[in-house]
Image (cartoon, rainbow, N blue to C red):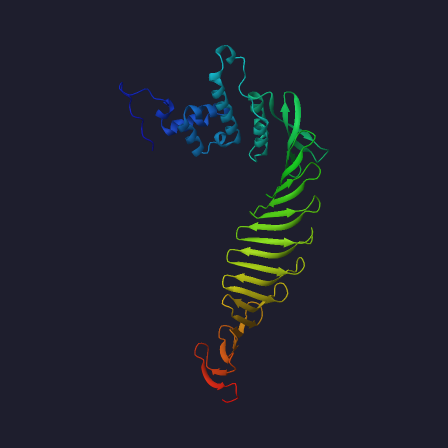
Length: 359
């Protein structure tokens, strides 16, 4: 519940923001009735507290990108006003919108042709227009710059049949494709001059970003950035194969043709694991540790069992199922061989064969 405003006295200084004296509920009621972007901007400049309240309350007019446009127009008028003589004030129109502002608005997903009349009213010399083009069922809604009564460069094209949206940059007659928004949420980004635009990046609906290289028609996937990994690819278009996946705690290397890439190596903080086998059945065969020791394994994918450890010229041999491998023989660099018995963790040496053959 908001507090009632304090009663003013004769000793109080005149308020600089009369609207700030009103309770929030009444202010919101007033703001909800403001439906012109220019009025929204004027209210916000007259009372910054009011503008902040509207934004925090998610009032549609104040969240629309045209609100920012209206604010710029209002500020431009206020800056220019002191420089004008009273005689010229009525003759000089408000600062018009710039082409860059209109292009930025047209590129915004929240932009709507419903507000083009407002743009035409505040900036009749330069605004936006919409028209339909294309044959039959393939009609296209085209947004253009409009200079007076003349149509200018195309900025956005939307397929009425499929719902896809294409964004363009460049002067009229030289418009080039820069972005395509697909109905499934995918956004494709392009670079290059008109008629040779090449796709350089694709942002999928799941947040993954796919990067491409190569000329138009031969763009090949080179990297996919995901929230928890980065996947690298090599090969020509249509035959890109995965070669490496970078994860926070590991780097996995792959070999093989597209669709049959198999894991061959995994780099971890403590060393490198090597794998063999076809895709989906890769099995760990050895692990090279940072201290120089190497462990060898046998067994199918997901169930490797330790069979041998090589460390500084010494070789330990193990037997038993995974998780219960026990040391059965140690071959030392000096030529001595030790034999062991007992379960894992409690192996005991039962025989030693020396280099001269004595036991």
